[in-house]
Image 1 (cartoon, rainbow, N blue to C red):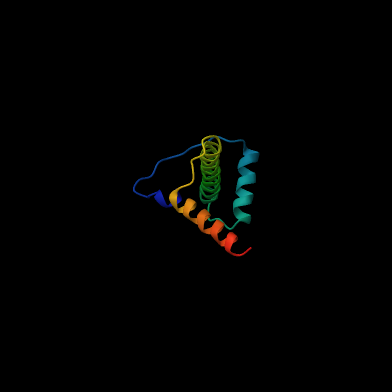
Image 2 (cartoon, rainbow, N blue to C red; image 1 turned 90 degrees about the vertical axis):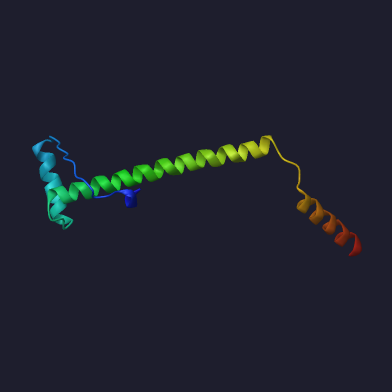
Length: 98
């Protein structure tokens, strides 16, 4: 997702927050070596957004995997020809090596 973002245009984002919260953010930004509070906030929000999206996509993949698994368990398909051939070779091998 991060690679899909482009800098073709910019948008403004404003937020009113308590002074104490702004001071906390400014302190964290300075400790983190960020040039500006804006750089810090953009970085923090971007990281959080990526984490949330990744977790969401993992959950979706897990749900899809679960559906596939339970479908295979409740609606099993018979063995294909290659598996039947392999089983026949195995039985022959066992009989010949008794």
